[in-house]
Length: 464
Image 1: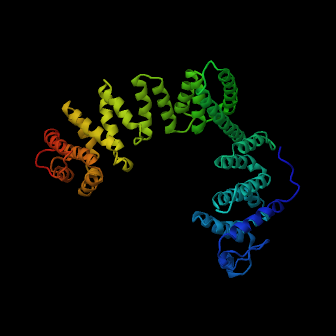
Image 2: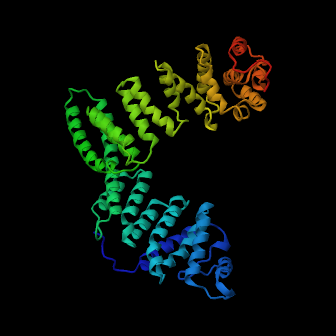
Image 3: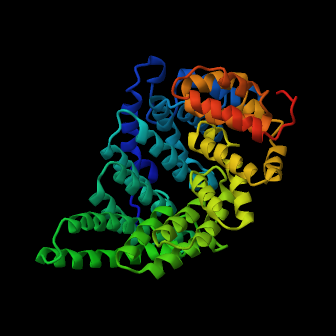
């Protein structure tokens, strides 16, 4: 249970306010180092405050003042001006005294979000300062207790303080305040799941130690039992969360690793299948990646692997696994799959992040030739139809020809072959590469010239 508050929030924050004064003073700027322990008395800020006062009056309305301060505070954060932000926060703490009930209730969460951001990045901040702030905020606005505890634990994890993080999570796990709401229920599950991740980390370390021992060794048996006990705790803490709709990638991966280690392949498969296909869960590319990788480890049939990657392709057509997907489709005996294999390569290269992917260009060059040799010219024309207006400038301009040749001659050759097939031997990219003198690639360029002449889908006399 949350301890009863014996002092007012503004009193509880006084020490933190003094700490902010020191942090703000870290910036050697006389304009931004004037403080007041009660109200704002910044000459440079006063002009801005007057601008928001209605009717040109000099009256400083409390709500307008704090609103103006919040705006400047947010601007300082956006510009990563941590010292200036600390100074604004020192003044914004007065919002805890707001007479408006709604604003007063909302203030603790705003102060926590902005204050934790400042203390995380401020060059003069440290773990003690952050923890002190978090502990105060947990008791001011108790409805934020679980969120703050969880974020505090993640901060401690970031600094390698695993025991402190675990202790923090254990305290949060048993915390209750009033009637348990749906949001509290999810947060408690999340707290428990993060405890599970910490337990999984300990389990992984023991797993590494176990791999270095002989199975006949007494220590091996002892460690195995210890690991089994650890895995049971981890399962209990993680299981409840991953049954709740959401994106739980690190928890799912950890749990699947343990299931596989103990030989529960069926349990791992069921978990990953539900995570990927349950309509209650949000669309998540990683869910399909994890299922595919598991099935691949199981040496599942090609058709099954294709069915998983087909959905990933629909969600993220530029995913790195799409080249693997193409390979599976290319080897398929189904004509529909082999046709899709061509579309997959074109779609990968539609994305700017893949334009220098030499493997994708090699695959496309090779598969274009194979497709045309097998008399499936209509497949190529179908893919090219929607790209003929923008791919030439996107991939095959004279500028890219010079740039690609200079950066990677082999890549330029693969692209030149594709350009020649799609745009004909008159293509500027193709012609530029053809004229280059490269001892190692000389024979390849010569073969490329012959292949383009034979397989290009462009009628003779057309130039681009």
